[in-house]
Every structure is written in C-alpha cells, then in structure tokens.
Length: 183
Length: 183
DNA sequence: AGTGGCATGTAAGGCGTTACATGATTTC
DNA sequence: GAAATCATGTAACGCCTTACATGCCACT
Image (cartoon, rainbow over all chains, first blue to last red; front, side, top):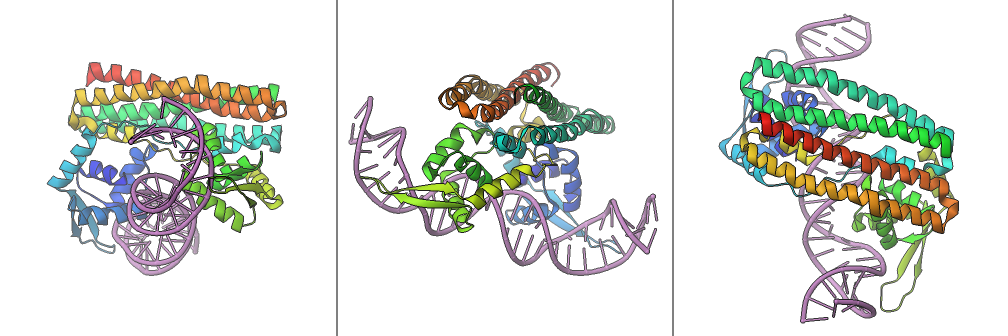
C-alpha cells in the first residue's frame, strides 16, 4: 500500500524520498505511516515498474537530491486503484487492548495505572488533530485554492482522527470508572 | 505479539493450534487476529524457547491433536510482559481513509458509493459486538464464575469495539452528508 | 456429490522495522 | 560544542499472508 501513498503524493507534485517522509508525517501518517528506509526501497521498485521516474539534482555539501515524478502509467495505476471499491475492513491491532484482555492477574492498581498513562497519550493526539492538523489543512487551501476539493477529503480524514481519539478517551474514562468500582 | 496472545490463551487452559484459532477468532480477533499457519509457526518457536510444552493426542481418522500447555517460564514471561507499562500508541492503518485522502479525482458519486458500501460493513460489526460478542462473554461467566474479573476486562475490550464501530458509523454519516453538500 | 469442519503443517513472498553507514550545514 | 536538519541508502531480521499439501468425517 505504501506504493499508493507514494503515487498519490507524487501525483500532487514531484518529490524526493526525504520530501515524501515529510509529506506522509504531516498527512497520511495517521492512517498510513512510513519509515524513510521503506520509502527509499519502495521508490526503487516503483521506478523499476515504470510508475515513476527520477532525476538526480546536484547540491553543494550534500548528497544529490533524487526527485521522483509520477509517469502516465503511474497515474493510471493510481486511478485504477482508487476506482476499485474496497469491500473489506482492515484488521485492527492494539497492544493496549491485548494486554488489558489478559491482565486480570496483575491486579487492579497496575491496570488502572496503565489506563491513566494511556489517557495522557491519547489526550495529546486529540489536541494535535484539533490544532496542528486542522491548521495545516487550512493553510494549504489558502495557498492553493485549487485544492479545495482535495482538502474536503483531507479534512474528513482529520475529523476521523479527532473522533476516533475522542472515543478512545471516552472509553478509557468509562473503563477506569467501571474497574474502580467493580474489579 | 502473537506470542503473547498464545501464552495468554494457554494460561487459561491447554489447547491445540486449531483450538487457538477458534479462541482468537472469538475473543482477541478484534484487536489481534491470527492466521492458522502463523499460529502453528509461533507454537513451534514458543516450544523451542521452553515457554510451552506439547503432547500428541492420538485420534481416530484424524491427525493427532497436538495439545500445548504453558510452562512455568511461560507464565513468568507472560506476567513480565503484562507488567511492563505500554508507553506508546500503536500505528493505525486504514485503507479506506488512504483511498479517500487521494480520491478527489475519481468524483463525487464514486466516493459516496464507497462510503455507503463501508457503512453496511461497519453496521454489521456494531451488531456483532452488541449481540454475539456480548452473549459469548455472558455465557462464559455463567459457566465459570471464577472468571468474573477476567470477564470485566473482556467486556472492556468488547465495549471498545462497539464504541469504535459506532464512531466509524457516525463519521461515515457525517462525511457522506458533508460531501453531498460541499464536494 | 459437494461443502464445511476437524487437524496439521511447509514454503514463498511481501511488507515493514531497526540498525548501520556517511557526512555537511544550520541552529541553539 | 552538541543536536537537529538535510540527504541517501543497505542489511538483517521479524512478522505476517497466501498458497500449497493431505485426508477423513458429517451433513445437506
């Protein structure tokens, strides 16, 4: 799938591997993150497939920037993929839930401490979605009004993050309250 | 991590690989699923580590059942892991959000069709959490009252699934409404 | 006659993480 | 003087998925 993250990004404008890392960290990381090393590997394979092409741009005192551009067949591959209806739901993995499920033996206090710790982490995420992420989208539309429609979709994914994290918080609070009384 | 799913399961009682697949499908699948083939592979490596031990139980007209039991060092490994606080948040991946993010070019109707399709899938999941999953937990506690405390934690993970899927539905509805007007 | 459940496993391939390797420039 | 940023990549390893391989029994 990282393949399509990269095609989607390059479809906006050409970028280097390093640029792509910035791009994903600031946009798709929330539902599709990527390590730099994996980006470089995937770029190589996309170029071999002919879906992107690259050009080395010399720089002073730094390695050349290798800038990638999406090709026509790359655009075709992206559009084809976008058009195929997605008829499943991705498998979700959550280490906290896994630990919680089997945690009866470690005792009430250890469990509650764990839940309180997670509360802090998720609170930070909610804030991030409401502030930084929202502002970043607003700024992009301001600069490039042509992306207004794209931004509606970006906003939908941001809103998903916000709602999901708010729910996580509500669940943590509810669970903490229940366990304090009944465990 | 599958390692710990298995240790956690075998800590309740001995099981075969096939049993473990049933167990996970009915309990942890929601936040940690497993393929049968991977279960068999992981069982081998856990046995090599000495965290579980196995015994072949002959059967008629079927391959032997290989039943695994958690060892003392397996119980120790499980408890140790449960006690280590989890100070991160797992990376979330969602193909639907990924497609949506880049979907501006495929047009309003294709996007809305996709969202409506997903609505049906997530509605089914909500129902499942509210009915089958809830009943399964209730039945287990009825049969084995000693698991009352464990069941409180299982119920917390069930409730997480229910709340999360309800939120997914709310988000889909909200997004459909917004795009119908503004896209 | 065919599907689904019971029961075990191996092999190949894909995707991803972490660690390693290098090195100049900019900022605190 | 140290840390972060810019910039690219390779190598080892881990975990997981999909496909393959086998075969009986029960039910429809």
